[in-house]
Image (cartoon, rainbow, N blue to C red; front, side):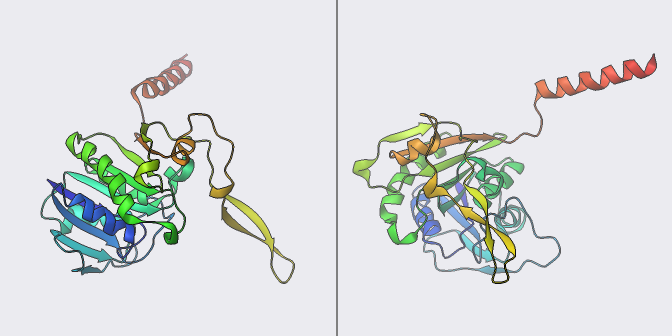
Length: 262
């Protein structure tokens, strides 16, 4: 099995190293990551400047590893089209520091890499850790939790139009309560603008991460379950149209044609 790994935190992130070490138990691992952090870049690709690729040698046992001066989506696109000898069987993006919650699905570079993989019909999962600071992370525990998820996904890999968003709790195995498959709570808005004054009295705005202030949740919220010690797995459907919606819109325009012909 050929597994591709990328991330948004950069190739020297301890999260990507933990992911690589875990996935080597399951097959050949190829690594294509940004050369620096590219958080909240969403699904952007580099168009008006060249992308430079550097082969990396500090991951023992991998089938190949490269860093590039591009976004997570660039990593997947260049990896699949140029760097890897053939299309991978599965793509993992992460392990991202900080959970991906609610509307993060539209902002996250970690998720964007998984979305890019689905454009090539490659099964994919974005993986994030419920911790905003590397100081409080024991990656041996992270690998233990991630192994359980990876084992199941790689046994049941399937090509689909969506991908999986996975959040890991930052806990040890004794506190781990299990795995919950649950939709993302899209009411969660983690980043909000706050107004501040500069030295001249003018107001400017800054996006504030309100993760630690999130409190009110539905009893089955994915983030509430994550805080309680569960791994949360959320299937994300990203089709831009559905058959029912397509039929509805077609009726709108058929109605318009009928009215204009009278």
